[in-house]
Length: 196
Ligand code: AMP
Image (tube, rainbow, N blue to C red; front, side, top):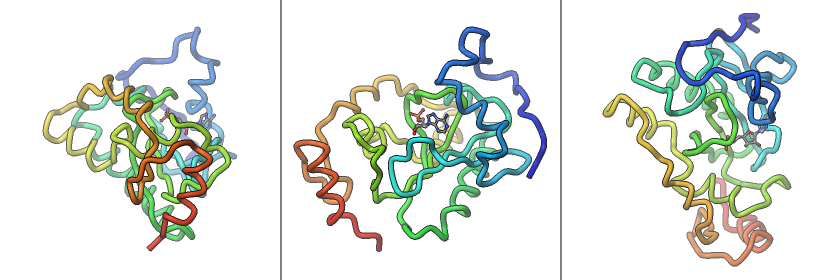
C-alpha cells in the first residue's frame, strides 16, 4: 500500500476551514485512512461505500484532490481511465457480474468519486426514490460517457438540470415498468434482475 499523502492539484475547490469537518467532506478523510482501503496505489484508493445501495458498492477516489466534475479537463483522462480500469479489475470476481461504473451528475460528497455498483440493488441502505433514481436514470453518468465528454469538449457538460431526474417515477432498471413505491420495487427487482 502506498504511504503517499494526497496532494492538491491546484484545481477544484480546496476544503475551507468551515467545511473541513462537515459530513460532505468525509471522502477526503477516507483517502488518508488505510484501514478503509480495499485497494490502493500511487494514484487512487478504492473503499467500500459506507451506505451501499447494492450487494457490491465501491467508491474509487483519486489521491490528488479534485473537488468535483467541474474541475476536470482533458489532462485528467488518463487518471479517470485508470480509476475505471482498477474498479473493473476489483469487481470482476464478485458473485454479481453486472456492474455499472459512473459518476453522479450532482454529487453530494466532496472529492471526485467513481461509483462501482452491482446491478442487483439488493441492500437495506437503498431506501428512497432519490437513491434509486440517482443510480438508474441519466443522473448516473457512465465513466465511458464522461471520458468521451472530456475528449470532445475538454470539460464536463453542465448537468445542474439533472436534479429533476431524482423525482421521476420509479421504474425497474431491467424491464422499465413503472412501479408505485420503493417496497414494491425492491420485491420486483428480486425476481426481475437476472445476473446473466
Ligand atoms: P454522491 O456524492 O451522490 O455521488 O454519493 C456519495 C456516496 O458516498 C453515497 O453513495 C454515500 O453512501 C457514500 N458515503 C457517504 N459518506 C461516506 C463515507 N464517510 N465513507 C464512504 N462512503 C460514504
